[in-house]
Each structure stands twice: as structure tokens, then as C-alpha cells.
Image 1 (cartoon, rainbow, N blue to C red):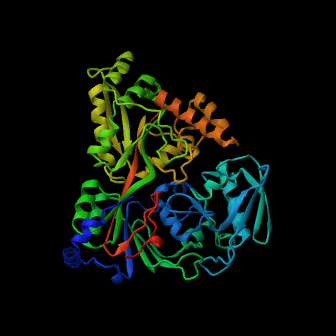
Image 2 (cartoon, rainbow, N blue to C red):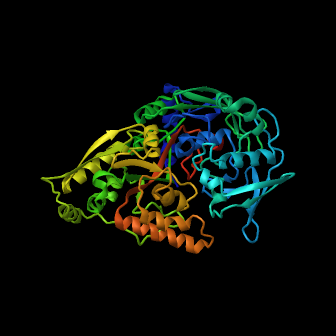
Image 3 (cartoon, rainbow, N blue to C red):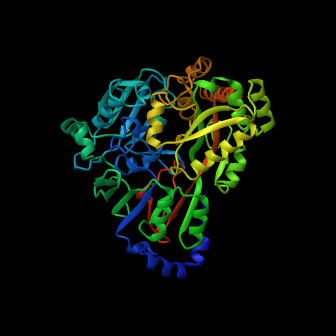
Length: 508
């Protein structure tokens, strides 16, 4: 992690005056309501159903209100949460879990082992709408004895406990939802997490209040307002003017400017990657076009020049922090090689191949500018790509229906660092998150889902990544380094998942 506060501390006196004129307290002691300018909207209060449930960028909001089965520390390691102990029996035919005692829901009722079982069974219901149902359905036939839960392994899934700290891995209140229904729950959600939902204005903000009965460390800021500010320029204005105390995901030049002017900046690599999906339609069915599109992109130059070094260039869907990372798999920048491949398919700068590439604009730092740069590099070798801008919600809709354009930019989150959640879900044809349906790749991936030999499983995923790179089935770009700006008196603890968690923020 890189902490950029030193220069700000040297200018603390000047910054105190400057910030006072803008209305932002230089010291957090004066903050009654911590205000965060967030980069993403919250479309739904349901953390386990629908496309919102698998959106990594809103998990920090969900984790402020709901507890996961198993907690996750800032370095992505697992820690006791609602479950204090978990694992398989000796022959891996059963799962065994211990539920924390003394936890209460926000309405004061006790959280029990029955809530945990109900949450697991609900997630596993094929008619229930959980997008990761095929993971949760691998265990079942649960039995409860006090705070002890046992269940059968219906199909061995080596990552089942990892998923309990990841997307849709939330414990929800059985009695409350059964009484109020799904609509009633979303209108007035309760969880067992550090904050209670006090007010929610769709497309505007959320106000949270600390839950006095929380089982974990009490949040220091008792009231938190999270504004939905999807435009990067507007987020910069929010924190610079003092209308927000914390923000994230701004252009690197703004990050550097504001941290030099008195705000504190923290940046560290997170588990998100920037990537371009190739949909197996139209010209992308031609391997020469795909390989040329990969060879023509100078990833390191993009990181250095557009992201000011705030990124790590990658050649597979694994980052150096992921379990199956293989440094020997590379896809070097080779524009002349790209031209040769295109020529073999009858294309050139005079007769370019044409397709559409979709991207967000302002959702991630320089997302649109990155795609502009890539389109420019493609043009030099004989690829003419037309840029279409969409909102992140539209990306999920199109991906779920397998109707993305031939190329589509996206940031992929994998906070458990397992290859099933990076390469697997992105590239396995039957997955609702994949748009590549090649049978040969499906045949390689399918046996790995239930592989009990961990070493063999990881080597299998490395082989899959090599094939994907050789066939250019996707274009990985870089691992993100997340910029966070905040007032000098607020201490922000970054999380390697990229989640911005207000209950970890304190007064410095």
C-alpha cells in the first residue's frame, strides 16, 4: 500500500485554512455525519438475487448492513463472522459449521442457526433467483443442533467456503422476510451488520446509522451518508468543495493534484481487473481478428501514460495476487504481428475489420479514455472499432442475455482470488456471466469445478488460462490500483476487494 499523506501533513496548517473555507472539517472530530461520494448507484437492496447481487462495486454498501457467512479481512484472508468455525469432515462428504452466538438482527430478534440454514437453502433454490445458485446447491440436507450445523456435500465444490465471503454470501433474516415478503424486505431492509438503513433515496443517497447491538467492533462514525455520484468529475468536486469527506475512483491527475493540496490519498492494488470481453459473434469468430486485437494493445503504455502508473498490466484473467497466476503466460505487444494476422484474413489499414466496442464512461478512472487509446492502437493495424457508451447496469443486462457487442470493456472483481471466479465464470460457456461458448473450453473447464486435488485443480486452471491466451478469447488489460481521497482527519482502511467500508473508517 502507498500512503500519500506525507506531503499533506507538511501543509497541514495551510490545508486547515483552505478546507475550512470550503466547509470540509480538517479534523474529523467535528464530523457528525461522515459523507462518502460513491462511484456507483444502488439499484436494489437485495444482496442475493438479481444482477445487483453479483456487482462487485456495491458489495461495500451491502457489507455495511448485512453480515456474510464468513468475514473477510482487508488482505482478503477469511476470518470468523457469523460462522466462527467451518470445514469438511475427513472424507469431504459433509460440511460442518458453527454459528456465532449472541448476534441480533436490526429489529432486535436473535440471529440463529436456522437463519443460516434458511439463507443457504434459499440461495440454492433453482427457482429462487440467486445468480450463483449452482454454487450454493452443492451442499444441502442440513441438520441443526444448537449453534452447530451439518450438511451433506451433494457435489464437491472446492470453493464453497470461499464463496461464503463473496458475492451473494449473506445471511438474511428468515422470519422478517417470510413475514414481509421480498418487496417488504427491500422497502425496509434489516441485517445484522454494523449499520442500520435510516433512509434511502433511490438514485440519490443512503443514510446509515450505527447499530448499537452490533456483535463486532462498534463503528466510530455513528451516522454515514453515502451519495451516489457516478461521474468522476463530480466526485472530485464533492471532496474538493467539502461536500464529502471521502471519495474514490477519480482520474490519477486529479488524485495527485488533490493530495498535494491538503487532502490525504491512499492507493493500493485491489482484486479488480480491467478486461475486454470478446463475444463469439460476427468477426470475433475469426481467431486472426482476436489475436490481432490482443497483439495491437500496448498495455504497459496505457498503464504508464493514462493511469499514471496506477495499475498492473496483466496477460491472463489472474493478477499476481491470485492463486493460479502463471507469469509464463504472456501476450506481448506486437503490432507488426497483428498486421500479419489481419492480412491473412484479408484485412488491412486500407480495408479494416469493423466492429463495435462497448464501454462505461466515468465508472472507473479513465475507462473511456483507455478504450479510446485501444481503438487508436487498433486503427494503426487495420481494426476500426466504433465506441458505444453504456451504463454499468446495461452491461449486466446485455451480458446476462448474451447480447454484448463483439467487444465490451468491463471491470471484473474476484475478491477471493480463486481461478473459478476469474477465468471460470468469465469464460465457461454455461455460466450466466460468460459470452464465450466454445465447446473445447467448456470441456477443459467442466472437470475443474469439482476437482478435490487442490494442486491438480490449480494446474488445470493454469492450462485453461494458457489456452485462452493462445486463442485470444478475451483481452485482459490491467489490475486496478484504487485511489481513495479523504479529509486529513479521517483514517480510511483500504480493502483489497475494493470495497469502501465506512465501519473501518476512524478519526485520525
